[in-house]
Length: 317
Ligand SMILES: *[C@@H]1O[C@H](CO)[C@@H](O)[C@H](O)[C@H]1NC(C)=O
Ligand SMILES: *[C@@H]1O[C@H](CO)[C@@H](O)[C@H](O)[C@H]1NC(C)=O
Ligand SMILES: *[C@@H]1O[C@H](CO)[C@@H](O)[C@H](O)[C@H]1NC(C)=O
Ligand SMILES: *[C@@H]1O[C@H](CO)[C@@H](O)[C@H](O)[C@H]1NC(C)=O
Ligand SMILES: *[C@@H]1O[C@H](CO)[C@@H](O)[C@H](O)[C@H]1NC(C)=O
Image (cartoon, rainbow, N blue to C red):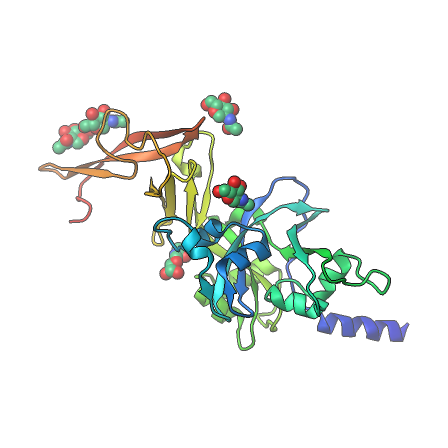
């Protein structure tokens, strides 16, 4: 009895903290992983490793493609850089986690080296459990295993504001305060979100960091909704429209992407304003502002409409 209690305590001591969000719905939400590169890697290798598109990684890190993504795929990122990886966060067996990353075992891999390759976002123990790795079912070179990755949705809300949650592996020398500062949140928010009473965190703990985001919900879009974290952009309407999240007021701003794809209906009807363009008319009393705004897309057609507002003060003056 005492022995098993001691054993349990030791297990608890070595176990790292990580948020577990129970769930019931089949709906999945957008989320991010903060990936600290364990070694120099090509962008295409990172994309393959996490089963995401290069273009989606570029968007999550606000790197805007000038022509195509091909030139970026071979870009080498240095070890210890941090890359945000966008992943869908579904509900799997009652817990929020991503199970869509499949890894092919390499010669000389161990559970520990595979965990390192994913920047500590998953532990060797978790890989072992999910894949039922044991002496009769060992890791074999060329074998395919599922990599469970941590994520949370929490309704994409924090303190009444829109957020996207990012899974973050605590590094040596970091504290809740230092992490909160970098990502524009607070220690008390981090404690609440992660359900921890104490501010102390240890290297290897996985925290859920709320990243402020812009939502299309107040914009009245037809047949589309989008949530874009601060510091990211999103391409929509078959890559014709790029939406960004203004860092100050967290308002979504959508403009033509300028990418080399065929796009129609980029002007508001009966106007020479492009989507995102603003026309300011001065008067004695102030200004009238007319803007052509994106309203979603339907059946390959881009929707837009004019918005008017009167200002006493003219913007930009
Ligand atoms: C990746 O991009 C391709 C082509 O642009 C698209 O068809 C596919 O749905 C994308 N995959 C993901 C996971 O976003
Ligand atoms: C898309 O819009 C049409 C017409 O406005 C509506 O009938 C349909 O339910 C919408 N579909 C979705 C998925 O929102
Ligand atoms: C958005 O990100 C920028 C740059 O990281 C930061 O300065 C700003 O405070 C953030 N805005 C919000 C509302 O979190
Ligand atoms: C601005 O809009 C208001 C209300 O629609 C209108 O009364 C006013 O004449 C407009 N001013 C100009 C300069 O267009
Ligand atoms: C916006 O203002 C313009 C010019 O004043 C007017 O022609 C147009 O009908 C207005 N549109 C809306 C939606 O109010």
